[in-house]
Image (cartoon, rainbow, N blue to C red):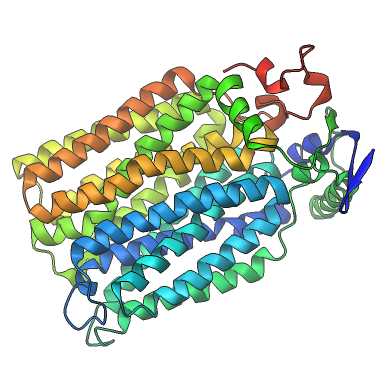
Amino acid sequence: MTRTDDAVIGTVTTKVPARLDRLPWSRWHWMIVIGLGTVWILDGLEVTIVGNMAGRLSEPGSGLPITDAQVTGMAAALYVAGACSGALFFGWLTDRFGRRKLFLITLAVYLAATALTALSTSVWWFFLFRFLTGFGIGGEYAAINSAIDELIPSKYRGRVDLIINGSYWLGAMGGALLSVVALDTDIFPMDLGWRLSFALGVVLGLVVLLVRRHVPESPRWMFIHGRSEGAEELVSSVERQVEREKGVPLPEPSRAITIEQRRSIGFIEIARTLFHAYPKRAVLGFALFIGQAFLYNAITFGFGSILVKFFDVPTGSTGYYFAVIAFGNFLGPLLLGRLFDTVGRRPMIAGTYIVSGLLLFGTAWLFDRGSLDATTMTLCWCVVLFFASAGASSAYLTVSEIFPMETRAMAIAFFYAIGTAAGGISGPLLFAELTESGVVGDAVLAFCVGATLMVLAGLVALFLAVAAEGRSLEDIATPLSATEAADEDGSPPAARVGG
């Protein structure tokens, strides 16, 4: 047994995973959800404010010499590029130094960058801090999804993960309605309203930071990284709280796991695990992320421009339409989330992707025929995104639960970065040009590309999705450090699980 810093590295047998999974839902779990899940609301607020204010930011007198295409194209792409970079950078740090440290640091980065965005007076300043805001948000995705899945009982993991990721759309709805007020020059001067909108994001972020200080480190991360005593104490404390709340003793945990603790894991072993031990799961992760990233980042970034250019909706009114779409997006994970734990991951993931893609093809056909106005277009989008939002949220759930514990944050970061870069950087740049043209056929083309990728991703899930519902994370993917799962030839235990 060796000591590194405050961690003691050795071999330990623990029931911590089983003890966490057999907990009933309690006030402690609500604290986790509120402390970690609310950041998605901030992300939705950020993206929507920029999208809906694109027209105002590009108008003379806004205090920022920027064009509409630069806001919905370059600034959007830089935000996504920052998110991809932040996910990879902070994802590696999250697996190495712990979930709690990083979800505090990433939120601090977001707060600072958002505050400085509100002070932008030049295009380069606005671009820089949009990138850094995304950098913080990307880190949040890796740190938060890792912590959520490791703290929530297996019985509830699917629905909780989907609803938390879907809460992005509560922020989007708030951002849409906020933009209506901020764009009203009878209330705020043209060069002040959009700055106050960003400042509100900072205020909300500070509130989240105060709550998040009480969220503990993941006990699963702790016992693997030589902090088994701390993990045992933390879980025992939670068990006492839950027993007092419920008034009944908890059942005995079902099984133990023996772990050969380690300080960190290298990139080579991470890559070997993802692509050699789990090739089919890697393909699944790519397909899900690329499909949802292109649909959302390519199309919703430009929805306000579509309303203005094709339906003559005033710039100051686009927020009302987007609020309806955001509400439909949130209802998807909220109402369908439970089915991912009961009906199962494979049918629900495949179904939501394929159905949303087919509905988007139908919307593109109606739009091309000239059968839609601003209201019916919004309703069509609301129905499409009801299913697409549940599917998109399940992409984060999938990559966070189908790979070994030691690689979890990095796996989330990697698939998020690659998938989002493919659809989220090229998407806004392409779609900004298509909507800027004012040609119906150009917008229809973008819709069809997004629909095609969603359907293809759904077909991949139909064959490759993992039946993870109700199962412990350690059963879905054996930890690399699990001594009882090691092969005689010394290959990582994950290799025994298969694709």
